[in-house]
Amino acid sequence: MVSGEERGETVEEPLMTHSDVTAIAVLRPGEGRRLIGMAVACLPAVQERLRQGRMVIVGGSTTRHVVTALMGEDPGRDRFAVGWIRDGQLGETPREGRGPGPYLFECGEVSRGWPGSLLERFQTGDVYIKGANAIDPAGHVAVLLASPVGGTIGAAMAILMARGGELIVPVSLSKLIPSVPAACRLTGQGRAIRVMGSPVGYMPILAGAATVVTEVEALAILTAGQVRAVPVAAGGVDDCEGGLVLALEGSRAAVESAMERLESLRRELSAEGMDPA
View 1 (cartoon, rainbow, N blue to C red):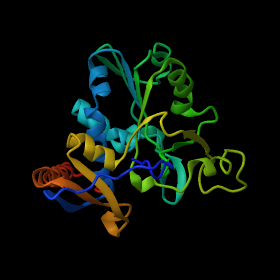
View 2: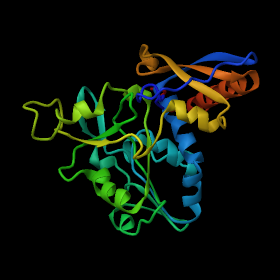
View 3: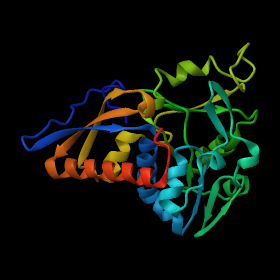
View 4: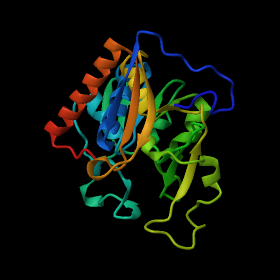
């Protein structure tokens, strides 16, 4: 997601060849989440864990689309997510409407519930998929914590880091902030004197500690690296509030194919009656 130059490295950006073309795509928020979910579902580590080993997919508005791509079923935004930011407040989805919790995969079997007991059996290479609330230009990501003991990410991080599990974080570039480390010293459930909604803590995840998939990586994954996506604008009005404008670069055939995929995705969401925002 982040260039070497942004990490302080000296790198050369790939140059367009005489045969490369560009196209401009507008992704509404729901379309970006669906794109990311489709890409995460295609990752080799994820596909392997459908057959063997262990995997957890924690509820969220983006991980919802990972489940849809993998399972052919939509767990529902409000039924799958727990925490959300809505109506100008930090809060939670209605408890009475929630589903049974994260998706748990073990040796080809699928169940749902709290991931604690499955995490105890995690081994090197097992996969934990959890969305994030923030990403910064250095590639650090962060999760807001409503639970005083850290919730699902708090339960997982020590085990993943200790045993060599793989953390995959699908997150939209609409959640870009200047600095995750700078935010850490300002957050904490007991630190703020006033909060719009529920008090929250903050779990930073350093760049390199997770496989982060934004809209940029998603297009690279889904086009087998044939298309390079560059964010060129963001925001809009109505259904494009929180949207993202991407320039796509590559061969004419690859760029045309990518644009067709995005248009197909838009039609798919429309047919499902899903809110594009």
